Length: 299
Image (cartoon, rainbow, N blue to C red; front, side, top):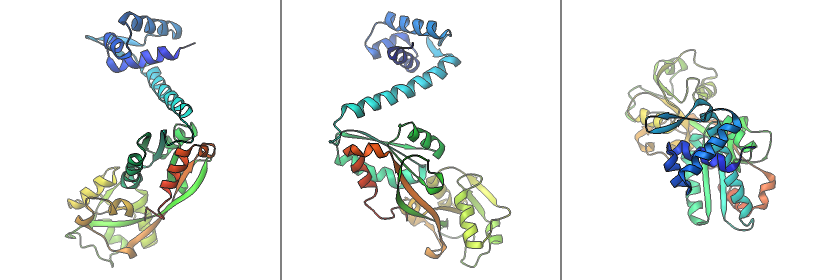
C-alpha cells in the first residue's frame, strides 16, 4: 500500500526538482528522500524520476501519479482542517466555484470584504468551466457552486441568486454607426468580438432582439475573457455582447457605449448550490447569508 508520506515526498521532489532541496523543504535527510522514492517506485514497478542535467524531473508515469497525489493531498488537508475546526466558529475554509465572468465581476469583490470581516476564515474561489466545477463539487472539493440554471448538478440544495442580463457594447465614438434601427444583416457585417467561436451570449442576444440567428458574422477577435472583450471594444476592434454585471463593474464602463436598457436581454438565472449536510457549519451558513444578502446582484 502506498503511504501518504511517500506521496508528500513525490510532490516535494517534483516541485523542487532536487532530492536535496526536497529534503530541506520536508526537514529530513536526503537519504530519507531517496529511500522513500525508491520504495515507492518498487511498489508500483515504474520509474518516477529521471535526470535532466543537474535536476531530476518526472517521467511520464511520474507526472500522472504526481498530479493525482497533489490533488489527493490538497483534499486531505482541506478535510482535516474542516474536521479540526469548531463547527460553531468562523474558522477553517470555505471553497466556492463559479464561472470566470461572475467570479471576477461580482464574487471575488464580494468575498474580499467577507474575508476581511472574519480574519480566521480562509476563503478559496475557483474560477473555471462548469464541468470541472461540478466534478469538484460532487467530490466535496467545493462547498458552493454558482452556476446558470442550465448547468446545475443533480446533487445539492439550490437557491436562486440572481437574474442575468446581457447587452450589446460598441466603441464610444461609434465608428460602426450602431443605431436602434439596425437590422440583423447590418449587424452581421460589423467586426465582432466573441467570447468563444459559438458565443452563447451573442447568439442569444441576436435571437431575442431579431427573432433569429445571424447566418454569418464578421468575427474579428475571439477571447474567453469578458474584461479583454471590453478592452477590445474600447480600442475600436468591434462590437460585443457582455453581461451587465461585468460591464457595470468594469474599468471600461465609461469608455464604451450601449443602446440602453431596451436593448438588454434576459440571459437566464444563476443559482447557488451547496451541500445540505454542511449547513451545520456556521462558516457555511454565514457564507450563504452573505451571498444572498443582495437581491439580483447580476442585473
